Image (tube, rainbow, N blue to C red; front, side):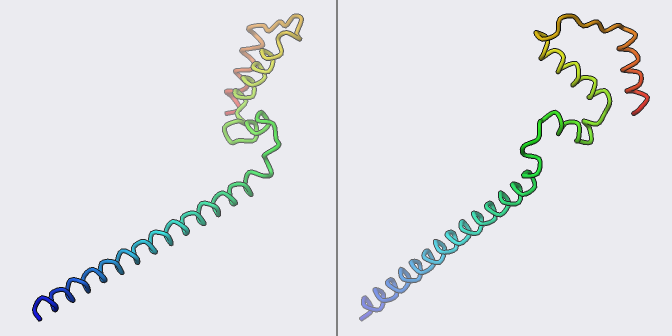
Length: 110
């Protein structure tokens, strides 16, 4: 009789542990599903925000950014464009005076 009570008690403990683990597994599954939905939602929001600017040229985006509107950045980008198209340019003369005036006016606009 004592052994039968001990066995019943042990079986109930095991059933309790199994029920607890089942609940933990369900909770984990639910958390995973919720996190997936949140990630999907964030991805959808990000796509919606980026959609209007997706097809724009990166140079235009740089110009539109708060830091890109800086005249010095504009001058730097212009020289970068010149350099990338150097094979198309026969001869280009940029005097030190022109550079000074460009940089000077860029600094003044700041």
